[in-house]
Image (cartoon, rainbow, N blue to C red; front, top):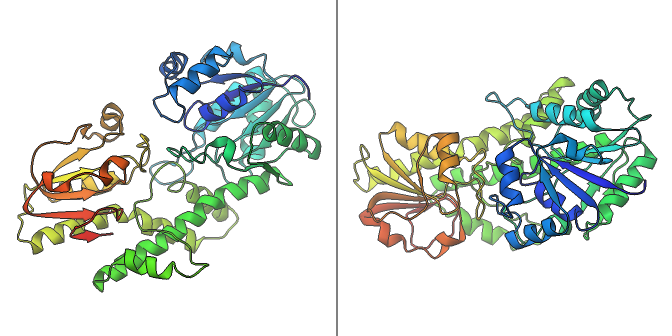
Length: 419
């Protein structure tokens, strides 16, 4: 396949870095239905902070274009879909964004073109759910008129060290020949190398178990934290000691949110249930991790009572609201579970996060997030997210004489409790 012209559909945390990278070698167009997002990017700024403004502006000056006009991607021949794959309120996979993106591809794809999906899915979604939509809309025949592939995204939001080109990429194609072409295209820009999986389903399965494995390991140490807390043993001290063994896995307890680890296991679980198997460990890990926000809040309340602090109408400061450190993404943040549980005790909760967008937090969760640290004194402080700004924060400026300080991430000194 010569003269490759790439269209990346979905310009979020995954799509934008990938599109920018491909633009260094190929004619690349980024497509997103969010016109305000496109306008922001073409002005040279990325509000997700995944791409530095100077890097984005350089790419634009060299021909990289972002658009919400579908006609601007009709001339492309290599389509990459990087839209979100969330779950609904019942934790069932919501493939709506994928269906809509597939319809978009179907409207512009031509004979001989390739469409590659990067969104996290359970095995079979690409060929059984997405491709039929492309066929229906385009009128073209799969593996005759057009071809497909799957290359799971491995973006780590907020990570400036392990950027897209530095993370080995799994690739796959709908035929062996197409697999090789797709692999060559990715290998031309991914400096860390690529791994060509034998089938699309293998690549899909590989992605969905990556985060399920991490989810289960974190669930294990979260359970350990609950056990050792009852024994009055510092979990972090235990993990440090155990970590001296060469093959001990260095996981730490904490809140597990976001659009990957907190979601992907449900995709695998539903796929298993479709084949008549009820996954026990996967769902047990999800239940454990989903319970941690409520657990933290109740531990804070217990510590306040032990110190003789009246919980009713008390004032509690939450440090951090994003789903992970040094990243503005608030999708599926589990900090909201801490907030809601404390509010059930009629606690006045104040949230401070220098990274989170207050407007988005208000729209998505109905909470006020302060960008600046308030000058008030609080009855309790909960460090929920380990932003760099909090590592050097003088907590004493936010507490009164007998306040509770609860460190979810284990980065502060002189605290009343750690998770």
